[in-house]
Image (cartoon, rainbow, N blue to C red; front, side, top):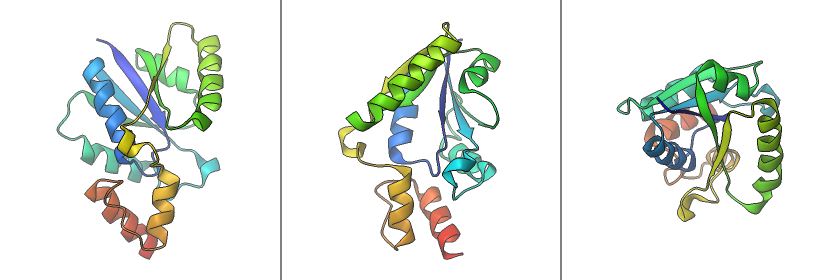
Length: 160
């Protein structure tokens, strides 16, 4: 079984993330979304809330699993789950330098685990979790960027 890890904070998961997960699931037997605690990013949602939102989106796809993790390197999460690849998303040239550095470091730590980069559909290339949260905070419509369950959770979280 060929397994890939797709790590991220997913705070919240967007259609861009979903696009990458679905395309990765077409190539791998199993895709594990590793939901990082990411306290340094001051997440809006707890890890458990993010896991629940993601699990609801992919509930009908047995190839996709969701795991939370903290205080662990992504390569260790990959090893613990017998993953052969780490999936990363690239939206723009600005992402490339950081992602290249990360992939090179991961290869140094775990040469047997490949880093694979996906770009989202051109209609989703500008979507980021940070922008979605900002739009939602100011009452904007985020339905073009996130699934209905995420939109509802954003509205509930922001209103209070």
